[in-house]
Length: 85
Image (cartoon, rainbow, N blue to C red; front, top):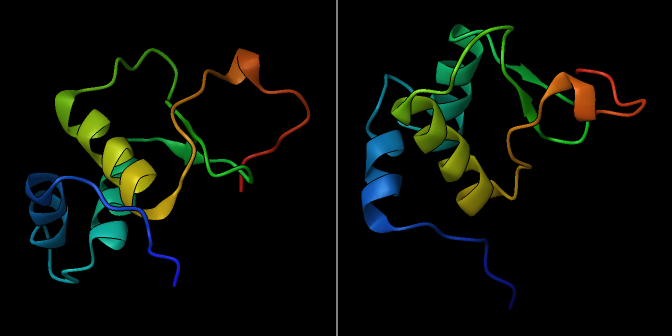
């Protein structure tokens, strides 16, 4: 049996109890999208121009990496032909 990735319990609790959906993936993605991040087809996040990731942004990205195998944070200049979703 293959198990899904799993982050620390504190990170899981932070995002699973973070909103009305109580789904950590939904809450973490909603946070990043509200902050202006764009999700690429490769499951990586592009920050909005001029934004330095906050601790909360980094927590959301870490949660999605550890729990759901998302990619990480990328700068637009590092993307080849990959387009945002």
